[in-house]
Length: 626
Image (cartoon, rainbow, N blue to C red; front, side, top):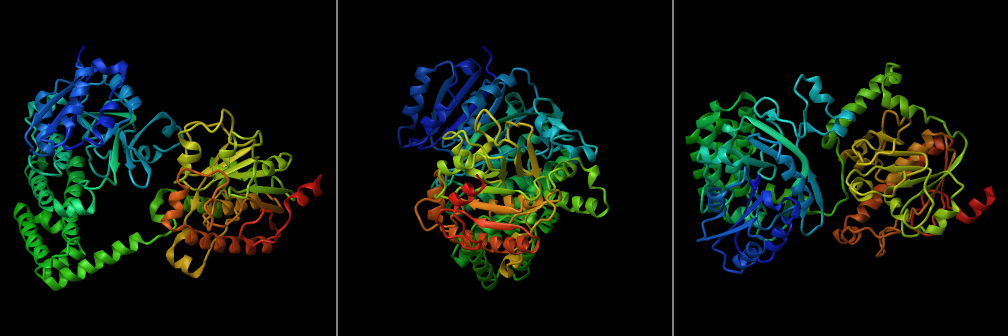
């Protein structure tokens, strides 16, 4: 059977990782259409033996080539020389693929004939356990289009690109990422062979060449909506950690010089949009090299190498040299890279590095989601002009205004004091569940009336890629962060724009906090999901609001009623006390707002350390209504 995809696995001393890498590529349905070439780059351990065991077991799929050590680029070159698959893509020996995604990609390749094929990828942080989905830009699936995520592209007159359809690379999908990175990219093997594409040997960072060298020959591109590449980060000695950047800085400088020279010589062969995209990428790579020198401590070495690199870039192209300047780089150049100026910028770098290492709560900024804050400004204008009714989302939210006027409700927070029996006690009450309350769904038939989620970073843990249950998140309406888009929709979701104004450092220092009076415009993030739920409850007209499970206490070994996988990591990182202080500031401000507008908020939590609101006994309050 014809091989549709060749995966080349460069491997050097990969005893600890290679088995996971190769296991991930075993899928019976597509083995006959898949070729896996392991290139042992002169390993000193049993890398070859591990690879050979797969060749012996799956000879129709796995192949092994051993060679003297020549670096990552040499392994890619050997793999390309022997590749017979229609498409070619590298997977490093310490990374792996999502097996199900691989199966779907190979099946999709049966109908694809583009020069380049793109797939999404994941960053897997080995130490922290964080998983980050990296999606292609400016290409959409049907659900994204239905949600209006392609409207901005459409309004510019550009083609709206959809998955598994072929487009022009230079005209339609030249900006699939801010940077062209090889984790996204598979090339047609024959394209690479026809144009004799080769990568620098005995050198790190040749992946920059993989991202660039074939592009002038790429005319057509198809994207597949699968997270194929699983990219391991935080591994000791990895080429992208600080120590490795310093150790291999000369290699990186060489590759930056190579790619800059290649761009200058070939820029007119690229279509206009690709050319300018690559110009920005070239400038970024040059600037980053100066930053790497400033990570070092030896002033004399820094000055010598920085001067040498600076002269080489100037010699390659004076215009790119000028454009690559910044306040810092221009200052260094003006002072002829004096040791005094180098010391100054080393101090600045170390100060910034120390600041980044300080334990702190997650902080959201307006800059982190400019499109959402632009939407908020748009809604404010519509409200001011009396045109809110013409915005469908605002109109839908406004139906909730005073819909429960004068009633009472309970907000079920997820602190360790919360119990299943307390939830079941509230079965006849109007309740708001928040965030990880979904962890209780397998333990009780109780469901909240409403559900609220504000933390977009926690979204995946609660309702993104898993089915919470086979029913709705709540019995009535789920109020979700504007960016939270579950794979499964039940038709009762409201997506709320959330302003991050309260997270401005100057505001936090002054304890300046805004509260929303109209959630159809936005809610304000007040440092805890509970405060978002309170804002929604007040908008709906609830006059008595009771909190349960609001422990506000991170001094114990348990921080949620059902422990989440990353709870102990959060405790160890040390930023929870700061987060608690911010949430107390938010509670204090929302209490003042509530008192001013005739709302009453009570704390019915059993224990805990939240003392902003008056305490009441949960049993007595529930019994009183009965």
